[in-house]
Image 1 (tube, one colour):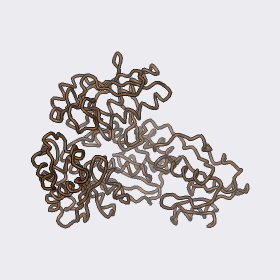
Image 2 (cartoon, rainbow, N blue to C red):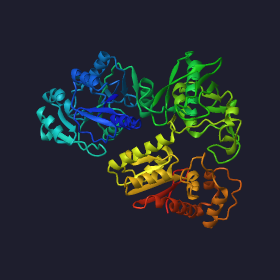
Image 3 (cartoon, helix red, strand yellow):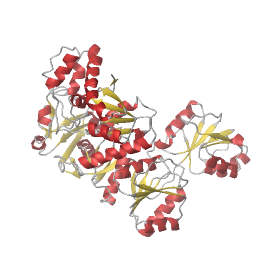
Image 4 (spheres, rainbow, N blue to C red):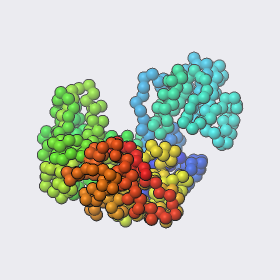
Length: 577
């Protein structure tokens, strides 16, 4: 059993992770005012001292604590650590992602260090800080307190001596509406809007004073949902029925980081931090060869032929940053991929991960040449779809998120149903289903007002997802689909996994003919190549035809609902009927 301390954005993310398990857990907040839908979680509202927390842990057989509370919740952090020590429980700190401390910001350690040479100060440090800032008023500083616009916050402000003239309230977007010489804020990290507040204050010519976040001695720290799940899998292996893994791109990046650290510092750490595309960092185990470093690919419970292979990286100084494919890494032999024929089969995502992670290590030194290799990669690739796709000589280095979520058809479908249930419960005006992170980013721009819970990944199970949406009485659904899946769906394949179906060139040719496009596509290997060979003036006609065929198969699955289908090209442009 897991007990989470939340009430924050991180707490909400922790819930999303734990809900994937299907197991019961507890979610505790101090005020109970956070709106949250729990399906497997049980809420506990109200502040807990160490005795009350110990009692709950013992009564509910808690095995793991997750502290996802606000970084300035000092008393709670201290209590969690004390209880964890007393009961011998592991504890994970779900920390925020913090930007570097800019030198033009005046950093302070506590409220007594706020400069006195200020006429008007806008304090955005929360209602609980009013009492600690009263001394400034006594010294002639006019202090305006920005607090949450709710009755409980107002009453706390009045109790600490604030007047109505001293109060202003957070508005949507966090816009500053007060004329002040300076602003006082907490180092609240990315999810606390710190960068946005600083940027606006600078624009208004205000001095920026920031209270440094407190630091606590947590043994296990994560700063994102992927890291949280992996840490739970490590500390409480039975909580998730299936375990996550790492993409080949993440493993290649970890190996390259380790090789670079050894080259530059002559150090050989057993784990290295890898920055994932979503901005969070995870620790990845590495090893070392004679003149390179390696990472063992772990697929978790995903059935992957690359599980257990070694991905090696050798680094050496160069006159420009370059990424090469060595033995066991395939090469593109056909057009239609992110890179032209002849290039190593290292996709755009992993290349960007390598650049993002290595640039800080080499910012003041010469660029590096990175050579990736995979022992036995050529033999392993024969058991993949690479030969059919025109990738020869080895495996591909791939991965968009950096993490492999475990595949089990039953578990995946159950997860989709749970996500749809949460999406409906969020009260969103529509639910947007999409194949993954990339398509979701593109479609999100069409519906920026929708909450994150309204976006649900279907993977390859388009038909099953629509059927579940019907069973759950979801009234409006948008289906975002990229061309590779769309041409399969248009042909009537409601499960688009490559194990079940491949692109039917003859059918695609018939779609072109129907759209009035005269084009020979016998040389096409991947559907996405069509975006490049169809004349721009005829793209809409083709998209309309594809969508119409998709709708013929999809709309009967949602007979009582409204279905919008968006076809997405590789640049994120959205086509509708």
